[in-house]
Image (cartoon, rainbow over the protein chains, first blue to last red):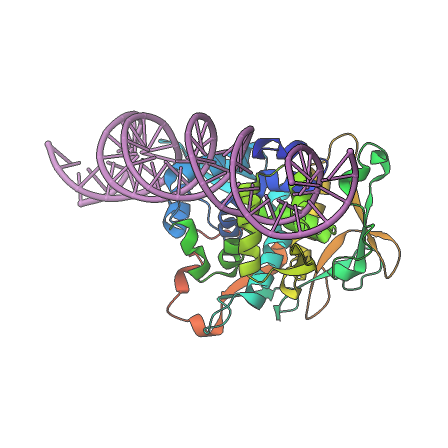
Length: 167
Length: 167
DNA sequence: ATAGTCAGTTCCTTTTTGGAACCTGTCAAG
DNA sequence: CTTGACAGGTTCCAAAAAGGAACTGACTAT
């Protein structure tokens, strides 16, 4: 499989990564969530080459993660803003931050902290079950093939003949 | 900035992405969470080139996301298993799946579903606040510079002089 | 008239992938 | 005891992507 075919894979991770899975895209989105909107702001904060930045922003717009909205005419200048689809990536960024905070900090500690506006406290994201509301970890979930995928894609899940689970 | 310097950035997203942020790593990890452990299984399921697979697995081991454990000697064969650090990436994968399920499915619907073992239901991951337990969305969080980063890194957060937020 | 800003393009070099073939150690069959 | 298979790589080369720097175009400010 080559990278460009990834969005046709019968797997939501693969399809999501077809959009946000390259080296720079999620860092660009991190900056979007911090309020960055303009080409030159991205460039100077990220140290990314203009060429790559142009390309990534274009792809994010094509995939409806960002939109271009004009903030002046004469000359026309547009800024990039998160769409609802883009905002929906927030949990992904939050979990990455949390993982980085937990496992990758140096002696100076956590660079940025999240404050929950509603309750006013410093917070960490906790992943919970939409049904019962309890916290969910890797060991608490099982994966099944979706209802319409019966025989076409049983091999989405590797066989577990050898008996063990992700442990 | 070039890619290899990313792990020194004062940002947990950047540091996390220095480990898992390339085109293939998160897909490899998806398979790990599904129970895949061996080189040739990864290769045939992913269609990745052996060269890249070797490299990514090695980096994941170096970063303590996976460990190699022998499953036979003569000849020595090892399989790759998630460490605790690796298991801690589960929320990232879950959120990606959820986002892909929400925005990237085709007419056949969701390929894989998560079942919460504890309550037995099909579930979606919900991100909540570790302090108050309520659901958290992009609009509910504010970011602040960490306690030890005062003046060295105020520019971690772009100035919001122009007034608006990620909206 | 000169300099500066923003959002790109163009051109060229260096890295990273993709693809296929080859290597190494061990067993198993004929 | 030669041939094949298997697992897990490594080597080689061409193609694609990224890095770096300079250039463009439509303005605006001095």
